[in-house]
Amino acid sequence: MDPELASFVDRRSTAPRVTADQPTRLRRVKYPQDFPAVVSVLLDTSDDDTVRHEAAELLRRSGYPGLTDVLIKVLNNPEEKERFRSWAMQHLGVNARSGTEAERGRIFPLLHAALADRHTAVRREALLALVRVKDPQGVETALKWLDDPSPDMDAVRDLCVRVVREQNLREHLPRIRELLRSPNDDVKRQAMVTVGEWGDEESRPLLEEAAKSGNPLVKSAATAALKRLDQAKQAPP
Image 1 (spheres, rainbow, N blue to C red):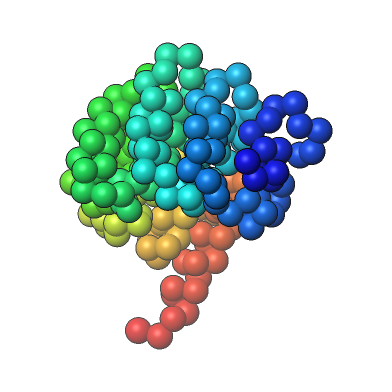
Image 2: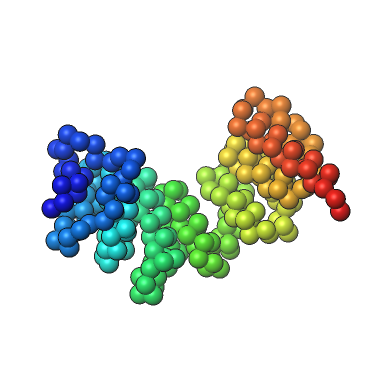
């Protein structure tokens, strides 16, 4: 086994298993017989999440054909916690864009099903993946969640605002304006970015109010949005 790879897969290693130059230090798995060792790291729920994530990245760089299968195992493992399941979903989202036709055919139903997943972070990653591959259910779900009045939806609503902005769905601007008053700061900030980018003068009073907020992140977002409004006004017709 490549010494660099051996150091990475061995939990007893005294050397750092993950370093800043990981992609260049450990570009790929050199020998096919070493793939199972890397797969075992990715599947080990007791190992460090960052190390496991790097195992997935290494398998991707190495062109490992079974990566989708391993990621699905991670996602379906009841012992997995929310954070790493969301990372697995993120990797599956990449494969939904760049994988083989057979892989995509297996991943898309998983993405659709994951919109109702028990973990919020997994639902978010599934939505993002569907939007990125231009699956109609992505934007449809984002709009549904955007308009759902339940406070529970605030956990995903900021992402929905971002999707609406990136898709330039300006017919939903009235709803975005309403969210400038959201009690959820993440939702509020995404709404501010959107009305600023769209040059919505009707939102100015609320932005001016938010620019006095004691929350530095809200204040910064409001100030930046006001600056965008000012630039839009000064721009030549």
